[in-house]
Amino acid sequence: MKDNRSYAIRFTFVIIGCIFLIKLFFIQVLDENYQLAAENNVMQRLVDYPYRGLVYDRNNKLIVYNNPVYDLMVVPREVTVTDKTELCKRLGITPDEFDKKLTTAQEYSWYRPSIFLKQLSNQDFAGLQDLLVDYPGFYIIPRTVRAYPYGGMANALGYIGEVSKGQLERDTSNYYRQGDYIGISGLESKYEEPLRGKRGVKYRMVNVRGLEKGSFKNGRMDTLPQIGENLMSTIDIDLQEYGETLMEGKVGSIVAIEPASGEILSFVSAPSYDPNLLTGRNYSKYFSELQRDTLKPLYTRPLMAMYRPGSIFKIIQALVALEEGVIQESTRLRCNRNIIGCHGPHSYENLQGAITHSCNPYFVQVSRKMINQGDSEDTYEDTRIGLERWRKHVASFGLGAPIGIDLPNEKGGMIPNVDYYDRAYNSTNWKFSNIQSIAIGEGENLVVPLQMANFAAIVANRGYYIKPHLIKSIGESGQPLPEYQVKHYTTVDSKYFNVAVEAMAEVVRSGTGQYRAKLADIEVCGKTGTVQNNNRPDHSVFIAFAPKDDPKIALSVYVENGGQGARAAAGIAGLMIEKYLKGCTERTHMEDYILKGDFIY
Image 1 (cartoon, rainbow, N blue to C red):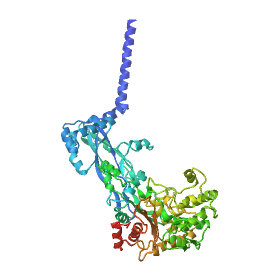
Image 2 (image 1 turned 90 degrees about the horizontal axis):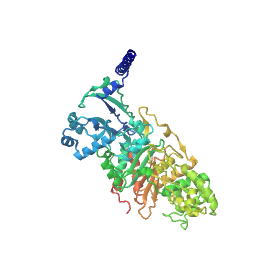
Image 3 (image 1 turned 180 degrees about the vertical axis):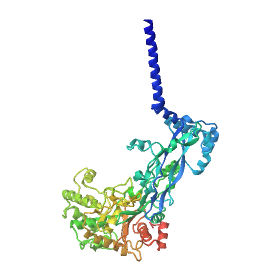
Image 4 (image 1 turned 45 degrees about the vertical axis):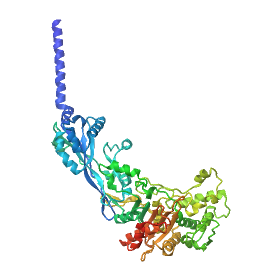
């Protein structure tokens, strides 16, 4: 009995021993997890960030490139600080700042690396490289920040910044990690995916002091970063710089477009800022200063500032009225100033004359006929039907909704409809006499400068537009982006645009635009606008295109509180056209007038 029990005990110990031997064999020979765990004690994983894509102007001039910087990373569990005072001195921070940064890193993870100090310069990096040998747990990874050789066009180019917690939560692609940079605004945001490239990873061997001992497994596990794709923009940087010079000390915008292609030649928002301010370690400081600036330099006026269109809108009214058949080019109407006030010496003009002299009573009478369906009687129902019909025509000019430029935060302005007035009057009992100010571009009509530049391009093209855009191609293909190859036609027949072209030519030839927008050897077509501004000086507005035949440039100019459109805006438009088509400015007296900026008196 005892022998049987002894054998059973021995057998049990043998079985247990065999199990341990098998397990040890499995651990040491078959299972790689323990080997990897051991290797991880001497292996360090480094993110290899790609270079962000470059941006060129239409003439292949580099307008955005990358500058090398370095992020100081920390792994809290590996940190050993022998002399905090010396380290803080070399890092340019106080001991308290050091403790706060280390605590933040520990709260994130004791084992995973995080950024301790961002965007060190080449000089900072050179001074730290040897010092960090004595401070395990700290190491440096190379990064890049944007640089702008021309220091302009900030509102269109946008800026990049560290990805926020909210952006990480919204990132359905799961691409971004804490500490990554992302396009925040402008083209940097719109074209973030092609610009950013793709991260790579490097694995390196380090000893217990953090000193690099070479690549891990000869780099077989490394992945190379993919450089971001370059962007070829539509901007003429020389014209852009000139426009920004003309707008110094002013508030407003310039948008210039090549009519045949929809390519934006110049995109000026004033006031603006040097985009180089929002790069490097002082990003937060300068961003806060720009946010506090009461003139809102971060505000992209060509896309976001909404104004009444003023007299420029009369051209659209004329074209829609011709399409609707309520008038002809020869239609003459008396300038009856009992209906609404007017300006200038004229009395009984045809359509072209009414546009040239910007006759308010003419367009109120035309709009009444159009919206009231040709009836002279002002009735509620006719006005409702006519307004919706009118609005569909106006919307075909790219008004009342965003056009679709390749920039974020585009506003659409407003063209009122029946529902709007029902809410405004809290009733359906309203008629044309209640809303007649929309006939002359006042009242509830709102546009953004981009839309007015696009309208100038529509007239230049005699009835169509291609969506305005800032990027011609992405990457090495050089192929135009397909969404910016489509012609968008208005609901107005192209045959009616000749009267608008001739009237706009006459405005510059002998009308309100002749003194500042007229050029000796280029036929400019334009229209002035003086936009009411609620008891403050009027906004000065001018749209134009040139040459009259085969136009190469169309533009809108807005100068807030600039007074009459025939002054500030017309002068700037004429200079911009001259600069683009001739390559230089011959009218130095006009340039001096614009730069001086005394437009009201």
